[in-house]
Length: 485
Image 1 (cartoon, rainbow, N blue to C red):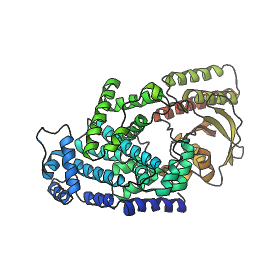
Image 2 (cartoon, one colour):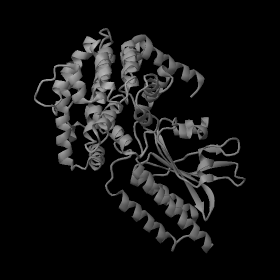
Image 3 (tube, rainbow, N blue to C red):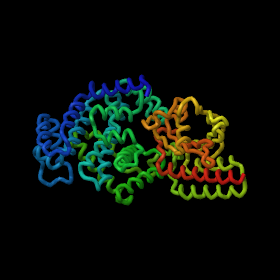
Image 4 (cartoon, one colour):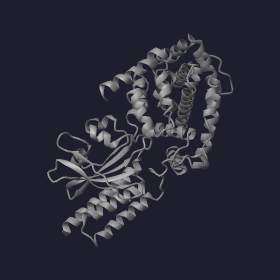
């Protein structure tokens, strides 16, 4: 991140954490003093909460609305702490402060207020969904997942609450394309909402799991996947975009994690919606209830850009078919370009990438130049682009040197920092890209890239694996072809 951008992000962190929401900051610091694993912390925490009448009152209301508690009413803070556990009590306190602090501003622009309340509702819903997705985990871990999912978009939520004219200006771009909205975010924030969330999480000493989820959203760990899916589900329910097929795939992915079938999962989600309404009442946030909606139906979906990374249940068989067609080519042609173009067409068609390009290394190995390119409809397009390989180490040279395909859903992730030059950052834009080495034997001759330009579209690890397998078959075919020549 450039110094100017980092300075602007830090400015908003200071505004949110110190100037406008001091109660959240002080509460977060107070809660951080009490060890989750130390039973002796319970009475100390209870005593600290008793000094804050608003927190104590909210804790009791929430404790008595939690369904799994005994029928006996919880009437003391100490009893609530024992029954709920220290992690749950801390989460309730922090949630209470967040709701109280973020809803305190009554003079917001109507469009900003709409974004604030919707973002708060989505985040609260995501937290509850994350707990629901982890029935096999201990309660403390469930509470950690709740907090991480609820605070995953804290940067966005807090910005709407305290952003003033900048928030008002950004709100007018909400209905534009994701790429345009992201560009406006960078102008107003110096970065994106994820970066702001990460800096706030560090400032408030929030959980390591939250920081990992923000820093490594593509991690394969089940906990990070739960946070990612909970956040995505809550936002899909609130704003059904894309296609119904994509939503069904999301439910299918979540069902695998939970061990439920789709019917059981949808029933659980409806129960969570009912619980959310009761809990929001206890938190004094009835205004958010209307934003937590039932599961969308097919007619609710907005099919803008539905073709991009569309849900295709036959991807695996179509990849196999593409490989078989390549095998047939081995009997009819020795033209390398025919194999590469067929692979590009198959990749674009099967996975609905917006652009698939083969970059070939020039003779002196100083640069890579676009040779063939195809669009989302598998049609050839004129595309002239060249990248230098000599002046600096970049992602293309890294892929060829390591002989490893890469998936970049977030070009600002730390793992890519040293490989993303200015011209490559411009090439990737706000979207995602796969970069896969093309080889003849052990010799790299270039790379194939598969791109998505829509900012909120993420390439799945499954698609990454299938694409990589297809390119590996291309490499095998080119190697066999070279032995015939």
